Image (tube, rainbow, N blue to C red; front, top):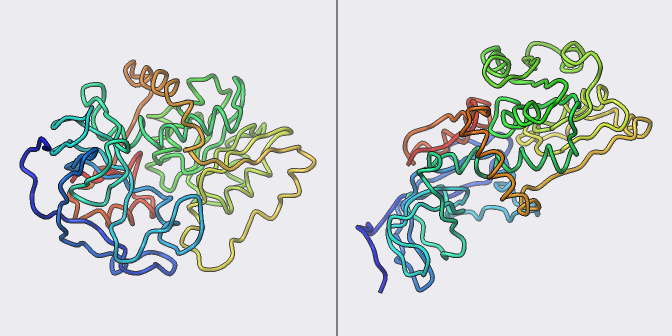
Length: 340
């Protein structure tokens, strides 16, 4: 028989009501009251404490084949979440344990215990397992060190540098001995945060002028590594600025996720031939083998205060869509999370 705390009969969950055309709108989503299922053998029920909203979720709202299946219409959406076990019918997970799992966008989740990872809320705040110690943190770490083959003395350019991934890429590059770290962000306030709080050597507001011109000013000797969260004009500018044997991690292309027309660039990809550039896409799931090293190194930097992790917290499961849309607009500094 399952051990359990007080588990309600129903809980709220977000469904995709319609596939967005261009920018998503609140009408594309529905908040539904649904039964909370008791755990079957080998399962747990979790009361979610924090939910993650991430750029990749926009792609899952389209009915296209990708590295993750699209969201189904009229069904609960999912995503990263952390919470506490309130009912357990599984060995190894007890009521009260904190876990990380993939059934977000809802108040309660019942899932196989094999798909829940026990985390320590004493080691770091619970929400950190959705950010700096979670998928965005491992994305930054693996994308810079493994995919881009970063080496000491490199000049690194990061787009979307005030976001969950970008803010960590720049700091990791600095801690690993980069010659120069440059970032772009979408406001003067974020630019100041990059330089004053995260230790970037230079940063610019991409809305204030052409990216190529601002990048040339910020990195007059060119760049060796570009960590791309944005695509479009940023990627074109970076290809122009990369030195011979430069490397690009293609992590995201948020500039075109909501476009209905064909992307405008990059138009200068032929430069990759003469410069012998390497442009490599990345999916964080390919880098699970780095997780132990990542926890040890990034956890150490967090404890010592050498690495800073910011969050933008939106309160209430009913505001999850608002948080998601805000993240797409760049309303967050650091990781955007929803406190359920």
